[in-house]
Amino acid sequence: MLRRTVGGYSFLLFFLMCFSVVSFGQELTPGAGKNKNEGAIFSLNLVPSAEFPIETGKDLLGVIGPSGSLGVQVIFPKVPLFAINGGFSYTFLPVRAETSLSLLTLSAGPGLNFEIAPRFIISAFGLAGGFFGFFNEPLVNAESIPYENQQGFGMSLEAGAGFTFYLTPYLSIGLQGSYVNYLGFSQGIRASLGTGFHLRGLSRKVELSKPQFQPVFPAYFKYYDTRKVGGASITNQERFPLTEVSVSFMTSRFMDAPRICVSIPVIQPGASASFDLYALFNESVLGNKEDANLSVSVLVDYKLNGRKRSFSINDSLRVWNRNAVTWDDDRKAACFVNPRAPEVLEVSKNMAGIVRKEGPA
Image (cartoon, rainbow, N blue to C red; front, side):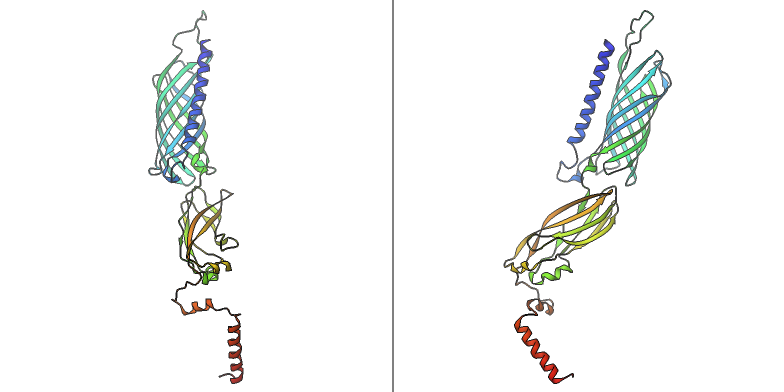
């Protein structure tokens, strides 16, 4: 009865620890602050493993024991090399007396991450904590009387290294090996192959800089289809390349549809691309009688790891009144002349008649 009670408590402890780790990671997901890139980066790791005892002090067999852990890793962007690891693990070890031993371990410690490539990371870590061990079936003597002290607590240490490969922005696989020491009880080598769920991978890490706009003169509205109204840049902070990137400019007040400004085949991780913004205004802009700030949108479409994604930012663009103009170029006077106006057609007709009458010079 005692063994069943201990086993029941261990299952409850395992459930509560899993729940608390998952809740901790979800509650502190990046993006809770004003700037997503300033917050801590959290990853959840589910790691099945095997443990090979190399020295025992409690009559353990030198055979493989299955193990598993659920952990969390915290990385601070200002010191990305350094990490804090923590988690809960369960280890099952067979013993000689036709029974088995369960070890529940709670530990935490520092780690180092070396990014060899955007999708490939080599890490090293150290953990310290405590464990609770108990026999899954009680050990009894020849008279079937259970021995005393068949459960207890102790300190544990673990150190190891491994590598992680990102399959998607939020999912990775990892392989690691470590040395485990249950102080005063047992030592072993642990080999692990598991998956990681990276909460930051669920948030967008493609940054669009604040557009730098030039004031718009309605009199030149056709000019801005080929001459820029402003410029901006895109930075890819993902671990994967951005492909089929398209940037459009739109204002619902004076445009009929978004104007595609640039198409970029690929932006590699960590790279940036600058571009100009263009606008295809319609004639309604000529009705703008007063200087005003116009609400505009810059739209970005791209593919990340084969999936289409998009986002937009809103800004304001200064639009002068319809009579405003700068006289840095005399040719700008032509924007106030309609080539189909009766007066222009009359002058043109007269000039053509004079040329025909006088003949070529």
